[in-house]
Length: 579
Image 1: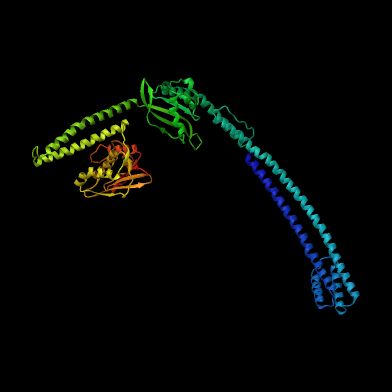
Image 2: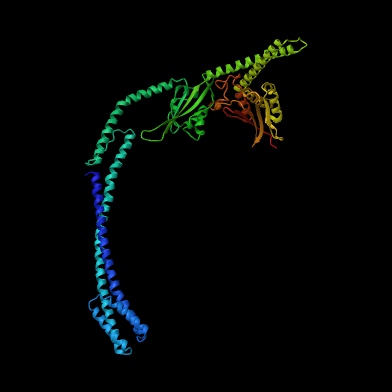
């Protein structure tokens, strides 16, 4: 029988039994209610009327009030005749009461009336007893039939409770276990349901699927092994060290280059926990420390170049920790199944970079001498004692002076950059006067500002603490920012220089009202050699990069805000001397 038919018949029969139980219960409850109501209305009210008539007799029937009480209850009793013989007794009681009203002191009449009342009370008491027996019989019958119907419903419900869930859940449980085996690549798993229902059809389809998967696995195992060997060969022939870890940080593989630089053998590390290997190997410990220092293990980590002795020389490698994540079939969340530590050999690039830096430093240093000689010669030519120059010669002298100054600035920036790249920045951090730094920067740019008729507005508190900085380099940074502001400002504009105290820092800000910086370039403005595309202004693209290095070397931060089309504000912070 189909599962759907079983459910329909079982639930339908149970519903029918519950409906039958409800009908039987309602029938007997109504019958009991009618019997009870009959006793209450027909007999209890008569007893109440008769009791009140006895009270009237006891209180002295000669009193008009008691006669009225007797008469009223007698009228009510006359309208509540329900038992055989009760009407005759009531009529007789009416005649006796009529005589009593004429002769209230007649004791014989009182006796007869009391006896008549007692007879009516006895008649109603007997009726109550008889009706009680009928109600009792009805109650016993209702209990019996309700119990029989409830027992049948309970037995059927228990049968369904113990059989129906098992008939449905057990095949599903067996099928679920088989599906888990299939998911674990145990394609020989089969399910056997002999029943001719939906589960039987499901077992046939499942077994067919398992057979096809088993055939597929057998047909592709050789291909997978070939691909595995191909990947292993590819990794082992890479010139860069590669280390593979599983999700538990056990070493899956280390290629030949990685084994060589670490001085380990494959048999020593394969399948071992990397933290256990790192205890005895300093290089492994250095390579995996970032793997345990981050909170999010699935984040790609790229660190600064590390120095490793390899190929009989100091070599430089760029370390990258790459999480390996997959989205399992049928699931919605990615699962990390391992990590790869990749070391890219950048020694040749480092050597070229060192050579470039040394070349720039040498050339810049050598250029400063002839440039200084040119400037000295220009000063001599401008001296009137040497000889008077005509206007054309004076114009040429001014042009040469301007070009020499530009060359001297460029060589200075290149020398500063070589210090940054080689890590040889010499900082002489001492308490310095903020006003002196501002004055030095303003004076250095005064001539350039006058040429464009640009004026400065300086905002600073009267009492400022001394800033902890290298006076020369802090002045250089502020000078560079003001120089850039002049270069990119319009004629007859204003440059705003502001200084204020923010928490434990002193903040310097330089604002202009020039064109501003396009939003897409704000993140690159402090990169080396970067210049805004389309800019026609001169410069090496090193000034802001050097400024950033100088400020950070003094424990500060530099930032930029720009409203494209309305101007820019460059700011940097430095620590100050606290009392």
